[in-house]
Amino acid sequence: MPIFHLNVLVSLFFFTLIYYYLFHKPVLKKVTVAIAGITLALMLYFNNNIYEYPTVSNTSLSISLIILSLIYFYQLLNPLKYVEIEKQGLFWINAGVLFYSSVNIFLFMLLTQIPVDDRPNYYIINSITNIIANILFSVGLLCKPQKTT
Image (cartoon, rainbow, N blue to C red; front, side, top):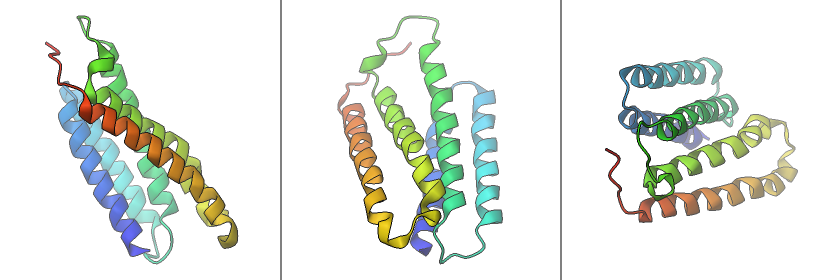
């Protein structure tokens, strides 16, 4: 289980950097750092045993990713000029982050409450959302970069 804790920390660091550089306004950059700091504090405070599944860490990471992706969608949808959003690669990548985080948040939250014998049935939810999110990431990576200015 320590690898799950490391995965959550690396994911928090990785997505914080991505969203920090995606936001144009300095206040949104500060909000990104603040959200990451709060998430990290929650992770460190509630994870007493490194050999247990990091339910609180995954849940707090999912909540922070949902908030950051919604803020990025707001930034994308409120430009001063018209932009074809469906041709923006980061739109699709952000949609994948939002989809994966919002669907799996309840699974991450309740995983320790599910009996061990029944968990493989619930991992199907994670597997399907992971496939869909990876398809959205692929679409985003295949989009040609568009001029936004």
